Length: 345
Image (cartoon, rainbow, N blue to C red):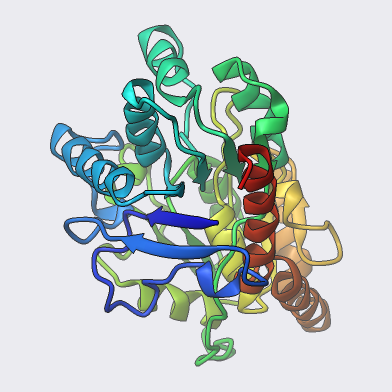
């Protein structure tokens, strides 16, 4: 079966990742055409607003139109909820709806009122939603009033990350990367009590209103490579998450990247973190809003190099087996087989 792929982070077919996961789909049952976005996608941390602007919706809409127009006998794969909604709207007026798979479907917050009604209308003809935590299957099924078997849990995947830096043993520090649903209040409370050097690389918008402890640095405007270097040089990577019943998932990108780099990791037990970190085996899980729990975990890892090494090695092995492009490609192929069978291809 032939699939047209639309992903907003692919704006040129000359990019190294322009084929996305398609090379990792096993067998020869499926073929693919990539439809690029019109401009490079803005970095999330550099955005002034967490919502999608009108201009951005126009660009998503145009990419959706291009993807549907280029699909003759086959289906469409879209990445991100905005493209799923745009293609879903086109499905409402199509004489013959196309099979559609929505990958990396994470809306962030399941809003109510008119936004929920629009989501239910625009997404009802999506055949499969691929989500990156198990809890999202149940959240979205209820929110969109769609059967739960339309939602597939596939772990977020990250390509192999070259390890080019080692832990800084001369000036050891903690690092916390990322912005979405981060519990900086608990993190700052813990590191202030411990007085340990800490780097928090997040968006300025996410740190507004906080009193930053003296031991914490907050570099802004750094590159992705800078973040990866910080993660590799840090003694411990921390992903402090803020539980929110309305939130769908958060932290998976940072978690998987740290695991791919074999880093000792502490994560708050919420927002689907349990789908990625096995407590005591591939990292440590701490309780939400608990400075005591976080302090205890930091002290344990900070003072035990063997434990850090053991957890990091296990995290790397587990991530390579479950969070790699190869693993995601196998899952994508399995899902495409299901949708193709149901569509009669």
